[in-house]
Image (cartoon, rainbow, N blue to C red; front, side, top):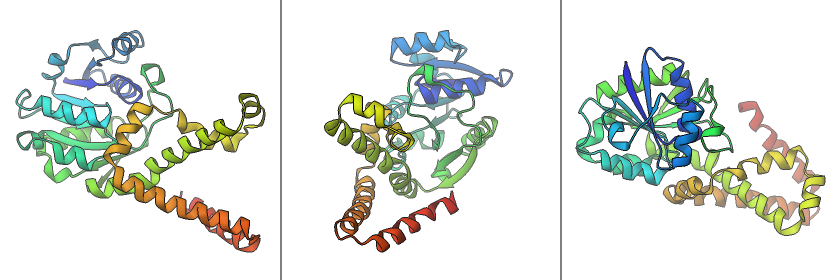
Length: 277
């Protein structure tokens, strides 16, 4: 039986615990979170088999870091010289290049850097879902830098939670993630703030339809987590925001000039996105 240590018992870590507990003959789940309230909730919700101090996590066969990206870098450095050469460390950070580059040389083969393309706007242990990872993409980055044992163990675990693995270079991942995930979060935060500055609460409740709710939903995401992601992927995010701003300015200009045929064609071009999705 593999002893799995999950560091961070919020949505991602708690959901992972639930998914692995379905394979109780294969995995024994230990959990750690610096937040005492999260520890208590995770135990009450049976997200892990046991809550332990961080020192016990270091002894696990598999250590999975489902914490903010800055904390991932610090935790991996903390593990240097304190884990077995056979230990598999997996991080679930939403940006990959800086994490991959910061891993100590002596620990590099132990680490598999991954990003599950899943989640909700909710956070904390109570947000956990047992099928959060089912049929979702798991991007695995810089896999050639990981050891053969660690590759095998990580890929088997991803298969066990029914994720679909895609391999990618870390820098390539970060650029794509900036456009597909990080910039949309910045837009959603902006939409929420712009509306709250113009409308009172009663009007928002009365008039907010499905479109506004869909666009603003991810503005409920954790500010602490997304501040770290924006910081780590700053250059790519700025490029993505500039590309979005260019399109928004184009839309504004067409409306100002009453160029309705041109606007219609611009909208139709955007419709083609759903031929891909």
